[in-house]
Image (cartoon, rainbow, N blue to C red; front, side, top):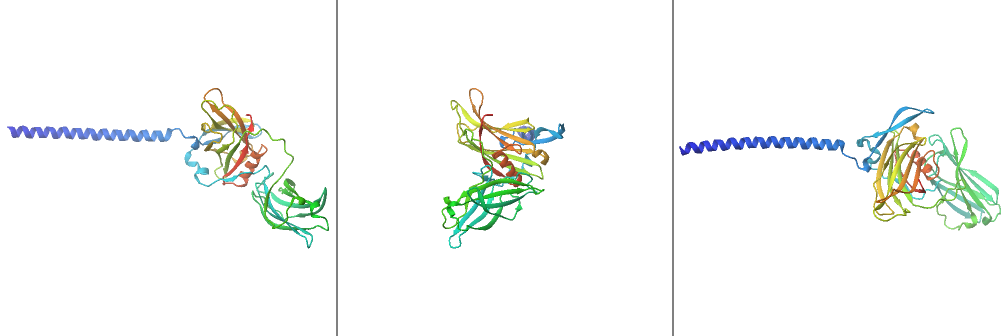
Length: 370
């Protein structure tokens, strides 16, 4: 009888353990399934960080003047090739508005000959179409307002960084070298052979210390500039355009020397990005606030899909603000980018168009106000 009861008890325990094991396995399977569904949902609907935020401009109904209206919608992070390529940006630290020119000088006293070596340029601006334009330097030897001699160097296709490595000799004909000056003019020739002045470098020879000739960089000057505005800081931006996918990427890298008035409580600078077409704001996005610093580092990127036709007409406005815990945001200043603006924003835009698929970074002075 005891043996029978023991066997029966063992069978009952075995059934209970089997049922419990089956229930535990089923519960574990349900939990795994729920976790998988939750993970898939979070992956699809999670909020993207500012560095992953992408926007696409889609063509909609017609706009007056033959321009199409643009709307915003989220794009795919998988298409974020402008940054995922891993290419380091080419940073122009001190670009000027018209670029720089590298040259060297030598003077042969025995033959009374001035030698000007034109090496290269960087950061020059194309005023027409970079695909069809040519650049042609012209060097003038002057005495006061009078041009004594002029030489032209063979034209070449317009590029962001033209290379020449040419030597030009001028006979001084007995004129004292310290009474002379020279001017190098960079001329752009469009597809109709019309000439446009890119800029020029003027140098008086009485300021030159002739010795071992060494190449030196000189700022290219253009038309007389307006008085500079109040300095409130600078913003480092990178631009990159992929013509095949029609994607334009703006990377807000960092800012420096920001002039911020209110530094009480919790404060910090942020950058708002506005995309505009024909002075119409299509949308905006902003970076994260960098707390309590006048030299913030952002490294946040925003990608837009823009057709090549619309690329000539859109404008980006980057507004630098100081966010703080009390009151409204303080507008520090702004930077404009596009074909329709002037100054460094126009220069950077043309550098981007001249170096497609390559990220070009440039420091921009921040203009006070909104």
